[in-house]
Every structure is written in C-alpha cells, then in structure tokens.
Image 1 (cartoon, one colour):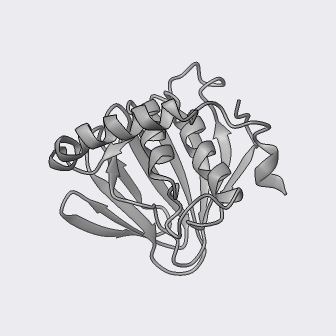
Image 2 (cartoon, rainbow, N blue to C red):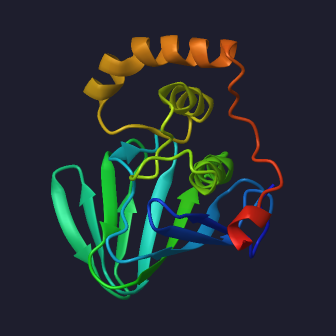
Length: 189
C-alpha cells in the first residue's frame, strides 16, 4: 500500500513520484503526487486513462504535453487537464521539471505505477521504462485496464485479441500483476 510521503522511482523513464494524497487518504476520490522529471524524461508511451481525469500543474521547469493532436508546453503555474479517455503523452521539455499530478478517481493507479517502478528497479524494464517481457506487460495491462489503455481506439481494437492471448499465456506461466512486495522501500534505496 502506498502512503503519503512515499517515493517511487522509475530509473529507466527518469520519473520520480512523491505521494501527496493516496486512494486511502481521499477515500478513493483522487490521488496526487509530485512528479520530478529528469532532463529528457517522458512517459513510456502515448496512452489514455479510460476512467480518470488527469490534471498536471507545472511547478518548475517545463512539460511538453500532447493531447490528441494538440501540443502545448506548460511552464511554471500552467495547468493541463486531460479528460477521461483522451489520448495523451508528455515529457520534460528542458531542465529538471517538477509538476503536481492528480488523477480522479484514484482507482488503483498507485499500484500500476509501483509495478512499473519495481520492474525498472529489478532491471526488467526497457529503455522507455516498460516491461521487457511482453507476457508481463500483457498481464499488467489486463490487470489495470480501468486505469490505463492504449492511446487510440484503433490500437485497442487491433491489439485486444493478441493481448488477451499473451495475458492467458503469462498467467499460465505464473506471472501476476499483484501488489509490489515491500513497496515503497525500493524507491528509497
């Protein structure tokens, strides 16, 4: 379980999360974290949150936000709002950046981020910060389908059947999404 003040690091993607509010502390209404992005850091892939609004407020530095076909750069004090189901991606547009990110409702996004950070810490993530093992990726995407999906409906339709097959194979081989063991200590090493 994630607690206020816990830190998670994805060393592959260059993201560091420090939790301000958790699903537990808000009764599931939202979760919120400080996000620190190293120069060149970016989310691993364009994606959407089917059931969550994402609100990003830049504190320092700058973030490049691509929402649909629109690209904007958010400087200190600027806010970007991504409605549920909207394809987006973003990354650091310069020096070390700090933003506050709120996802509403919280759902289980904390565990989703924790799993990706854990895999990176264990050396099981690729250069973008995604699981190297496609079976593990399929199991995670299936387990957190309420929180995370492919960027477009076309991608979702095209990949649904192969993803379902990979998920079944991964589970048969014993891969589980589960809660990260001993989290959040890994982020503090």
